[in-house]
Length: 311
Ligand code: AMP
Ligand code: MN
Ligand code: MN
Ligand code: MN
Image 1 (cartoon, rainbow, N blue to C red):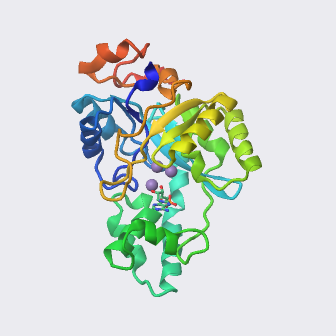
Image 2: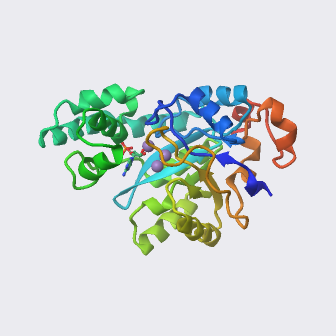
């Protein structure tokens, strides 16, 4: 029954590489029928207060969120954190460290692009970054579309920003163990984001899931904007095999760039246990909707009370 909740637990605002404010995202989620929402900016929780307040104002239940960049066997893996205490000092410090290398990396990316005749990319990308601490490849992509080099961001990634292309710079992010530990020690749940996106061998993927569980990770995204319908089936089986809870999220970034809208994905397959069942005590309930959700999600805390219940 509770797998039929319209939960969207993965999206991005201007605080990372989305184009909408937390407030605009909350309004859009509500308009699309989302019931439980989380803003999951990359390596950054600076938008959490605004998102929680906006959720409350429009009548959405809210879970704190983040998407941490991790390096695992030479690839970048994303770990979503849900329901943590945003005031947790170790989590905050870990995220500051993870963001730390982005400025230098961006300058090296611009140098690589300059070598193929694209000048001024650092300054250009920075103009598209709502948060200068969080300059990402997405901002370079927007600059290259805006300056007419490519027709859309997909083309920019294909030609310039993926491994082997002129604007790609290898980067070392957080370790899997650190990311999972920061989230869980802050009272939250760690979730492997969009597992089908990684290019791991079967053995490497097995290592990812096994080590993730070993560090205390509990969830995996099954229904996400990054997966095909066939991949929902594959990762539903993986969730069951590893005894992981299942999450659902659009990974919405922008009305013009994202192919999946907030709140429009299929529901989680019924045989899976949703992450929000185990996170019920971390959900900040929208006042007017309390009775409706309370019937399926108990116990619950008042908004703001999550902090004191963190351990
Ligand atoms: P970064 O964290 O700076 O490496 O940027 C990663 C972000 O780039 C992802 O979170 C996506 O938003 C975006 N991205 C990655 N690959 C692609 C792609 N092929 N097409 C469009 N956007 C992409
Ligand atoms: Mn992104
Ligand atoms: Mn991601
Ligand atoms: Mn994402």
